[in-house]
Amino acid sequence: MKLNKPRFWDSKKSLLAIFLFPLTLVTTLITYLRRITSKPISFKIPVICIGNIYIGGTGKTPTVLYLCKMLQENKQKDIAILSRGYKRNTSGTVLVSSGNGPLENWQAVGDESYMMAQKTKNIPIVVDSNRHRGGRYLVKKFNSKIIILDDGFQHRALSRNLDIVLINGYTKPSDYSFLTTNLIRETWISLKRADTIIFTKKNPNPLILKNIKEKKLMYINSTFKSSILYPKRFDKKNKALLLSGIGNPKSFEKLARSHGCIIVGIKRFKDHYSYNKQSLLEIVQLAKNLKADYILTTEKDWVKIEPIKPNFLFVVLKIELNLSEKEKLKDILKEQLNLNLSHTPCKNDTNKSQH
Image 1 (cartoon, rainbow, N blue to C red):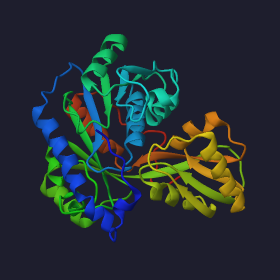
Image 2: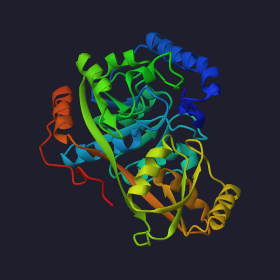
Image 3: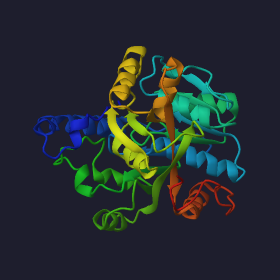
Image 4: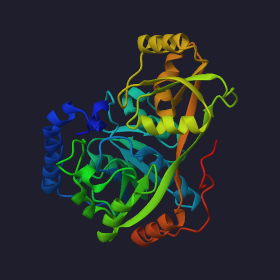
């Protein structure tokens, strides 16, 4: 069960967050019961899980894409992605891509899976809430040799060889306790199941780093970098309305500011928001009222906006994982999965954001 995090939840002054504190208990209890009652089934191939313990944008999709690229650049073949396909209007096993782009519309497979299908090549993608069934399908149909399990840390039915958990570097251990008003999937103690931690957004604060070291967990630091995906040319000096329906809009807005955009307004929707003609008409009217010259949005939002063909200039920001310790990740993959990886750097790696 995946829950959307309400925008008020991160507000330390929100009484409503305190009143809804029992929801945190229910969420973590469901996760715990699922874990102790599930009997993981193993495949004879490596399964790499990318997950988190906090509801909200920690960067799972960019991490999955980064890992795919790293494996392909190191001559690993027959890679596949297995996801749930959150908020899709279908059920069961659905083939998102055979490795050459989406086979279904985004409504049938979910916005994130659809976007990954657009951005990967020669990597089959399947969505299935039953991860073991979906994995079986990939192995049988594509003879997959490596499966990347997207958002699967709480889904124990499928055994995995490597559990990578993403932690927002801004957070601290107390943000993951029952005593916090944050909406969490699991408490901090669940990290004992993890093999590796990747800190996203920024390097971790000293308190959280000390705790990770005490747990003797391997960790890697990362940030996000961004570039303009579409259109290739536009005037940054013009005025922008920022638009997003993602788990962590503040991260997107910070990246937008780093490009020197003149921001005249910000419009946020809940994560995985489904745009329609009426909502886009209202957004465009808002942009006009604010005298914005264009609307800046994310790739994840754009896959749902583009089919509607809005009559206004949209600029799309591409957000990628920037791993400062890529060789460390390679070493972990080699050691845990016995993969033969070279030390050729990923082309997109850099220690600075691309503007």
